[in-house]
Length: 488
Ligand SMILES: Cc1cc2nc3c(=O)[nH]c(=O)nc-3n(C[C@H](O)[C@H](O)[C@H](O)COP(=O)(O)OP(=O)(O)OC[C@H]3O[C@@H](n4cnc5c(N)ncnc54)[C@H](O)[C@@H]3O)c2cc1C
Ligand code: SF4
Image (cartoon, rainbow, N blue to C red):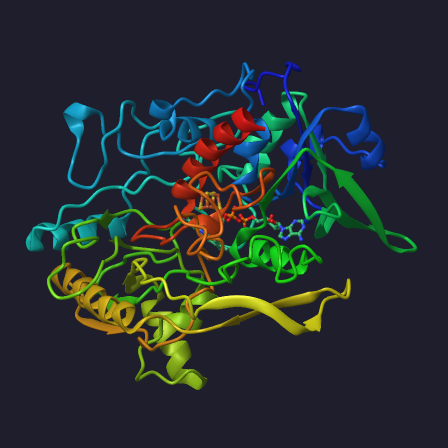
């Protein structure tokens, strides 16, 4: 918090509606709530209803902070990629022009923090990469490797995925962007607010959002009038909300004039390969990914796309038991226990996010079932393209090669089958584009046909590419929020 300017500054207000009730300490300390959003919106000049925006939303907060007059946050095109890194706290090997390697894009500045120290696993896998002449790097991750912004460094506890961080070293919106957005004095945050519909006037023009909060007597409905609405609910819920916001002017849902909302749903297909070593490789030593190669992201003969491959992710014992046991070991009884006891620390995993072929048949629609608010839930359908499967096969072979060259005496892999991959890294359901006939928004996330309705999250990705998506989502949020604030 010490580095966060706490002043109000002139500009346009953002009004943020976050579904989750809980925020961690930083944001909770400084959050602003109001019991009468309608009165608040009327009294202030309200830029946007930012839908979403609780832990761990990625996209909403750059939008909340961007403003043409902001002293705190100004992103020019050249600074676009570096600003989110230093605002949020990224670590990595500094790739200044003189130090550039094959795995890093051009940058004008280094990372704000040094990379993670290598683990036993990193050293073992570096050995194999060297033998195969793979170029490797330490992937930048959103974790404090040194004390920063009043929070401790990572203590390598290994509970990164799915658990709170004991040292608050994990950088999420709750301890980075949200406090900064609130500190500008131009953001009002309502937590525990579930947006149910984007409201329109009789002509189908967007005028705000309706949302529910829990009251002792049951859900209480509110309306927030806004000059513009930015939807950042993630690729599944954003599509669902646009579809739920059908009106007489837009009977198939907002932005759905070309039947594109909800289509091209994608995630990342991760073909995991495991290797059993004679030495300790510590699969539970956090935060996880420590060595990667981008040698197979593009230009692979005979297949489309590729993937960054890495020692991705940290595995707690229970996750290991679920995912990593070799196929010939029974999942019950003494076999499984003996394998765990003898080998939990001696198995390493290599995997990577396969660049998927977008498919309009993979989609989010409204189901016939409803949630506790009596709103139709999202129904997901489709399966990955056959070419994605071929790429996954190719990547799994490169991963197995890497493990074997590193000294694994036995390797095995998770089954590669056609299925929907949207269990993680959901994207694509409101793709941006240049033509209203084949996309939902323009290149800045403005929904075609709506001057004041924007999407600003993973839904915009025409493809997720061959990398984890967050940095792209953040960079686009930074770029688009500048465009939004300049045109509203
Ligand atoms: C366990 C895990 C590990 C991951 N690890 C990585 C990683 O290492 N690297 C990486 O690049 N990516 C990673 N990802 C993926 C990454 O977190 C997502 O791609 C990214 O957060 C998506 O950003 P978004 O803004 O599209 O949506 P989100 O971050 O999902 O934000 C959407 C927000 O909208 C809120 N919301 C939804 N509906 C409503 C509603 N009706 N009303 C109000 N609020 C609503 C949600 O509560 C949520 O806060 C990981 C994801 C998970 C789950
Ligand atoms: S391993 Fe993950 S959860 Fe544990 S201290 Fe490090 S960043 Fe936090």
